[in-house]
Image (cartoon, rainbow, N blue to C red; front, top):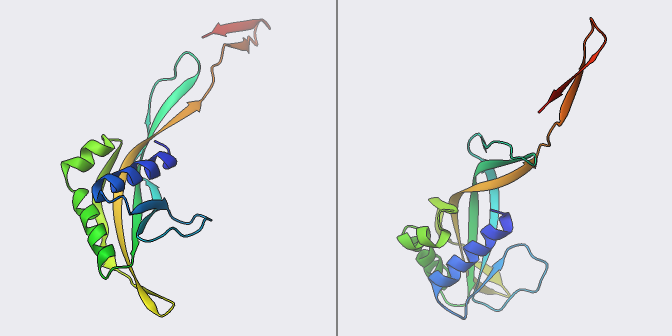
Length: 171
């Protein structure tokens, strides 16, 4: 699963969970104008390997599939105009991560592990008015497929030091 797919799956989950067409979901740290509130940003960080990779046999074309087990932190921030609206939205999302809906949506491509930081209100002043903002951080695990072109050796030629002849060793 590619990182771009992870962002897309999380955004889809949030849209389905919140079920409010006025709330847009965007990816954090983009160089684009800020959308109209309410909106939610998604950021992915702390991508770590959690175990040794699972390597499969090399196929006839010299390609080996390797499954990398990874964990990552997904940070969601909600921005709203209404008092406590951001916390309420993220609380709904946090609760849905612990249901079967989460399992069925991610189809075991990604798995919710735990809440790293529960819903926290972090209002920020903008033009003298506090903007309702809240943050939620959750940890996920996923399996990432890496295809490695290890190549194939068609033949090895070894020189016999006694006779001086070449010995051909085929695959």
